[in-house]
Amino acid sequence: MHRATVDIYDDRGLRWAARHANAGRRHEAERFADRVGPEGLRIDLGCGAGRYLPYLGFPTVALDASGVMLKACREVVPEALYVQGDVEHLPLARGSIGGGWSWMTHLHVPRVRLPMALWDLHRVLAVGAPFELQVLAGDYEGEDEPGDEVGGRFFAGWQADPLVDVVTGAGFAVQDGSVTVSGDEVRLRSVRLRTLADTVGEGMRLLVCGVNPSIYSADAGIGYARPGNRFWTAALEAGIVSHDRDPVRALMGHGVGMTDFVKRPTRTAAEVTPGEYRAGLARVERLVEWLQPGAVCFTGLSGWRTAVNPRAVAGLQPELIGGRPAYVMPSTSGLNARTPVGELADHLSAAWAIGGGA
Image 1 (spheres, rainbow, N blue to C red):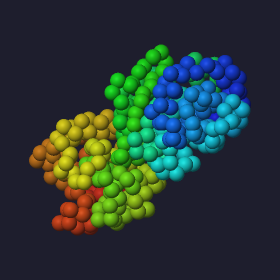
Image 2: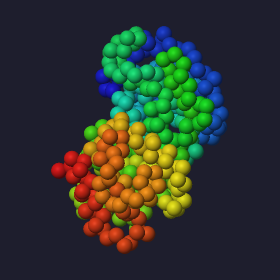
Image 3: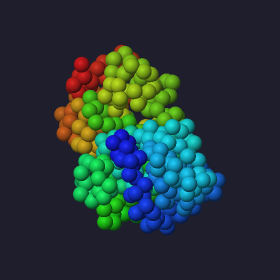
Image 4: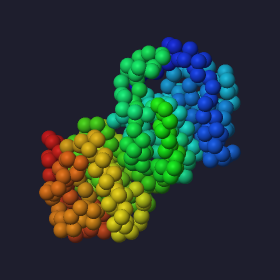
């Protein structure tokens, strides 16, 4: 979360909270509580001084980056479980939370960092957990938002369609009819899927795009996780990553991001339909247009052949994806044993070089 904005909340956030104590969307909060149910542990991501916390149901984790706001919130709702933490780095165990509520909190995260903030939320939420999100609507991003009565806070506005793309890429199913824009707010309802969340961000040298997650990988939270899959072995041999089965280090340390054509997990890629490939390619293309990685490497020929060029062969493609070079390589699955690890590593090295990797 934008650090200077946290400092502002510590300094004068209580004055702002006193002027905005009314829970204007109380109905949404109570509906969220019903969706989680009486037994589920839910989290208020950016609880502030507790404007919505009483209506979210219990048990509840109240998280905020500001110690001052947390202290004030504890006085209003003492029964909550209080955690001082950052929505970009949640100090919570995988699958430990049954529902997430973020009301005007993730607007303090720069746009290019929202995918990884939601990756972390996907990590801590249980499969099937509801997630409700409201952020600033529009195109503004910066620290001089004209309507900021506090002054100096960082805001990142979102148009509805790009926001839906990011939430979808993070492994959530956005509920039909839930996306609403009213005034300067855009909000949506979603559900945490049994799938992989994208690990993407600014400055990627290479974006790796798989066909879709295996059920094994979806449950592990790591792409290409199955022991028989050779992706990580080949990537280590190619020198484009330095840690086995660690997509976050791959992104942060090496500029290697990961996404998929299709988010629905299956036992084999053969179960993915042509319609799913085409819809997935459109989302991936918008992702690439936005973040502009050096190149995109598609693992497995089936997706590219179905959605783009049925005669494609492995290697650099004549077509671009989102304005960036597209490279297609053989599947790294253990089912493709005819392609040795060394050859897979050579393909990754070639894609990496096209993307500007040293």
